[in-house]
Image 1 (cartoon, rainbow, N blue to C red):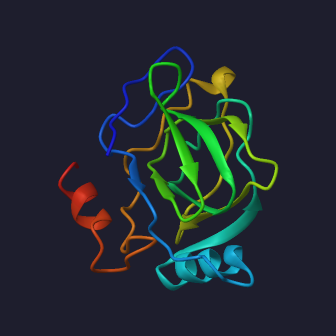
Image 2: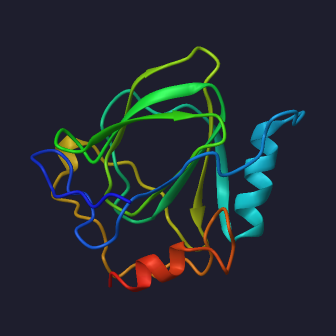
Length: 163
């Protein structure tokens, strides 16, 4: 878990920590690993999924939380802005980003495939450094389920304890 302070470009979330699950989803041998992540996230109430990479510029979402699952490949990702952390994310890793948390791909394998999704009722927006005044909505409802581990997963309890 990581809690990031605001910097000059990214507001981050002053209350809810980013959560990184390493090797959280077994994808080895899956015919369509992205579909496995899409189905898992949807079963746990995280929908409106997409497949792509992670943008090479720092950005955040002020009006929704986001989950990123690595379906294939690996990437070095800066999380939390300039003063945040750089993590190498690889196949089967999942990161849950609270609203306002900056993320940026610094480098990746050519085969990188990421599945992203949002909790039910989340409204996607894309903010960059020029939008710094768009602080994250701290009154967003907390997700009912962990995107990976469901209702009994750690996310609801971890985030509820931080509010």
